Length: 232
Length: 72
Image (tube, rainbow over all chains, first blue to last red; front, side, top):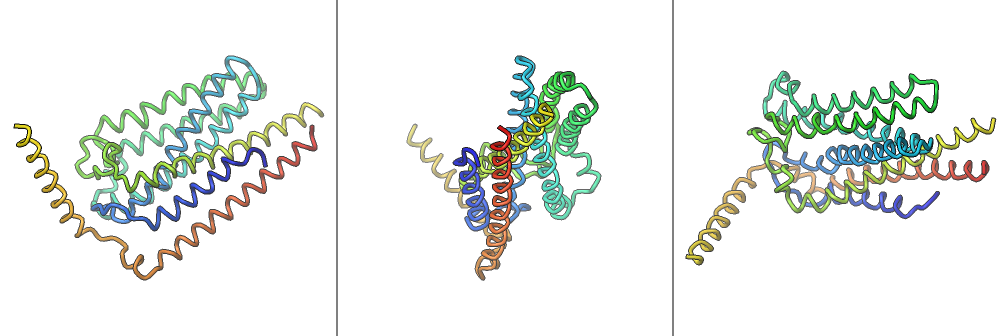
């Protein structure tokens, strides 16, 4: 194992997230009840995804500046783990929404399907899905790296309207949107409870570090593969 | 004037906390699970999963390190 202090930190933070997240006191909120603890898991997936995508786009820009093949591998693997976190965030959100929106708030399924946050997140993830389709469709390594680096910047730019801006403009059931009278304002990050924050921020760091660790493993594997290819 | 404003603020804060305190009492939480200690079972299961996951990732990491040493 290489440079392992932040890997241990990731474990410690995640162990703290689970132990503290289940045992410590949380604010008593209507509709959400005990499910507010999902904040330490579901929301952290999206934070982790965002951070991994930022790292990915930085390496794509680096590739375009230097044409160093290493940067392309870094960009693609960080985007892969980022998308994986996004899919996990989506899946956990589906479970959470099923209970808090459909069961407890008696929203119709039609209302939930119209939910701008869900549609936006789906669009963002599909755009990243197209990134991997695009990568796979090239046989020339240099062309693949260049075109997918440019596309990665576009995909990153599309994150902002699809998951940050539009769901905040139109009314949404999802917390954080203005005009959502049925959403729970306690999740608004301006007045998020300090008891939640105590676990929420370490949880974000822990999950993100785990994602980075897995990404570095995949990168090193890819570099090894390339090395053997060149040697043969 | 200032005193009046400050006292008004204090009264509002007091009222708000009283109202929210009243509202919080009615919210249903998994208090039974906490009082009989079953929550520790959930924590134990999740921590075991986490330990297993990290051991697995660490082993993969180690294996790749070994490959990297052999290749150079």
